[in-house]
Structures are given as structure tokens and as C-alpha cells.
Length: 117
Image 1: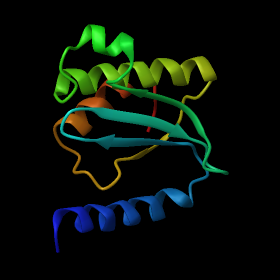
Image 2 (image 1 turned 60 degrees about the vertical axis):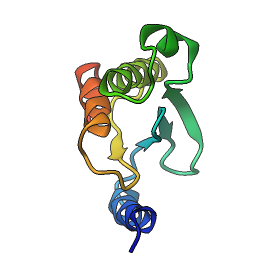
Image 3 (image 1 turned 30 degrees about the vertical axis):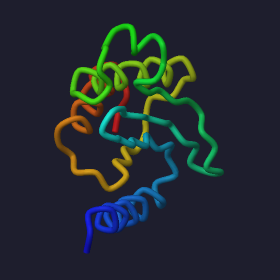
């Protein structure tokens, strides 16, 4: 089994557990150069807000988007945007990525800035 298929299998298992909770999900995707986060509505799959290392504010603060500092900046930004929308509770969907490194840094920063999951 190659890495991509294994990640998709892990993502399916995670989303199956989240599906029964009826709570918005915080979805994370990472590539080699950037990291992205979205808060998706629990009912219709509508993106409520998003943040990534491609945004000008994050790019100005962190020059390279593929490290833990950039992930922490995106986590802080998504938590701030969620608070503005009145969202406090989310389910963390790591999209099959291991909870380690950049994914963990994003989650920790989002928790420190007010999101609960």
C-alpha cells in the first residue's frame, strides 16, 4: 500500500467517527510548501471559514509556509476567524495525516486561541 492510499484510508476512518457528532469540523491539509485549514459545516459540507499560509497576513509573518511556525500561525488565524463567527467547538479532522509535527502545531495553536476539540 503506498503512502497516499494509506492516508486516504486513515482519513475515511476519522471522518466516519466525526460524522455522528453533528459538530463543525476543522479540516487540515498539508503539502510540502504550505498548510491549509478549513472549518466545514456539519450539515451540508459548506466551508464556513479558512486559513492558509498563502494568505498575505500569514505570509508576512512567516516567510516559509512548510514549517511548524507557519502551522502555528495558521492555527491562530483559523481560531480567530472561528471566534468571529461564534464557533467555539469543532471536531479535528486531520485528513489522514499523523498527529505529529505541523499538524500538531496547528492543533495546539488553535486550542490556545480558543477553539475546543
